[in-house]
Amino acid sequence: MAQLEQRIAQARGDVAADLVLRGGRIFDLMTGDLLDGDVAICGDTIVGIMAEYTGKRVIDVSGLILVPGFIDTHLHIESSCITPFEFDRCVLPRGVTTAICDPHEIANVIGADGIRYFQNASDHTLMDIRVQLSSCVPSTHMETAGAALSAEDLSKLRGHSSEIGLAEFMNYPGVIHRDPGCLDKLGLFDGGHIDGHCPLLSGRDLNAYIAAGIRTEHEATGADEALEKLRKGMRVLIREGSVSKDLDALQPLLTEITAPYMCLCTDDRNPLDISEHGHLDYMIRRLIARGTSPLAAYRAATLSAAEAFGLKDRGQIAPGKRADIVAIDTLEGCHAQHVISAGVEVTDAAFAARTVLPPVGRGSVRAPRLAADDFRTTTNRPDTDVIGIREGQILTDHLHEDIAITDGDKRPDPARDLMRIAIVERHGKNGNIACGFVRGFGMQAGAIASTVCHDHHNIACVGADYADMALAANRLSEIEGGFVVTRDGDVLAELALPVAGLMSLEPFEHVRDRLVELRDAATSLGVTLEEPFLQLAFLALPVIPALKITDRGMVDVNAFEIIG
Image (cartoon, rainbow, N blue to C red; front, side, top):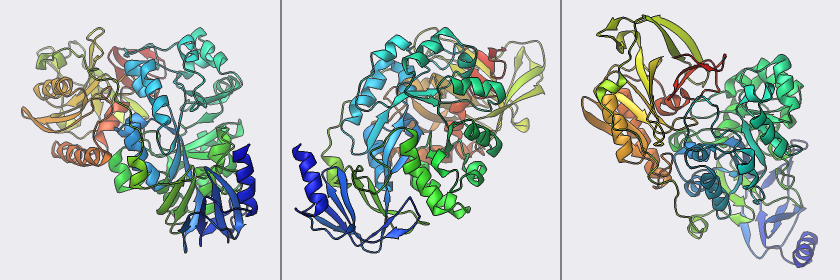
């Protein structure tokens, strides 16, 4: 009651506000107008706008435009290769005050303890990290993950203050064909928020998926697909990650009419891309540059996102809303000059005052010791299934090529851009090694290996030389996971990710610099992809069409079966 009384008193101006932002103009998300007047803040809540206020503390934001804090509606913090605390420090100064995360990357390695780590971390970050409960651990029955979470396991994780609902339901065949395990999880969250994941699903199958209670979806890669989902009641999340780049394709659909039902997300974005381009601020700039009205772009990044996920306390600079405010240079520029998160000014001192939790998931890479011969394939037929990369998408093509057999083995062929790809089980469960072919890296020599391998996070390795592939994969065991580039028996570059083989213990600046070195090393092998490491990671995800590979073999995703 004392807090309530204080809010009302400060709103009326009977007593000085805790904090006043003075001199800026508020971007009104109702009309698109720019409003004059101070912004008064009491604790973590906005209590007054469009008036003059006295404050115990005043921040001069003259000449700047005030917009609500940005909300990333779907992401995996682990894919930034840094801990939640470093992610907080990396993106909050860019205006991202709320992140709705799905920790299923770490959950697929260490199970419920990974989700609890994110829940506990959310109690200490300056930004508001909302932790959805991971629905698909593992994502399918066609891979070996480090853990498995049932509906009963998820029920034990409920009740934390960071919870919104059930995270992206990737096993869409399990939903539409009424798999009992899937139904148990859906039933547990019936009436609550359930996030979707159904690439290219349409018609009656899409109707069935939505009828299960799934309300948001980020996998639309084309305007027609997104429009059908919008018309059937789904909120569409426009995604622009380090690999999955759907903004240009969906931008024409984002208008002032559709903006209340569309949001923005990054899904998987690393510190190098964030440093070079930005995060949600980059998406806003790009949308406006391509012709989207500022009102539509900022609504999608703020108020629409809040309403889609039931966060009624934010998304607008208005009395009674959470004091998440970004002071930017211009609507078109979207460069944050000051950021307020829950009433706290974002500064180095504020970050230093946080409690940082100890890491989890150490020693999680327990792969077999590999030799060059482990990457040979035994076959007697030239016809070969080949994964075709689509740069900028996580969709792949199912290609067929004739590859000559030499000494019982089909070898990589750099001249035809046909590289060996292998997935090595690294959780210490069965030691599976599956090999196949991929086209699209442009590699001419050496190898790349990674333990960031969606969503089971086994070792993924692609290369032109078996000995270099073995060296790269074995080095991952020695550094507790990460990224490695090798050539001619030497390690050219590496980044250790010892937290579950997914996240670094170093500051995000260190990770950014190592990613530059890794990118340069990959380029020296002939690799032409802008982001080869996360592109490699998605080649192992058997819920994204059309052809993928797991530790159990090549997967025809459209048929939802292992084909060899």
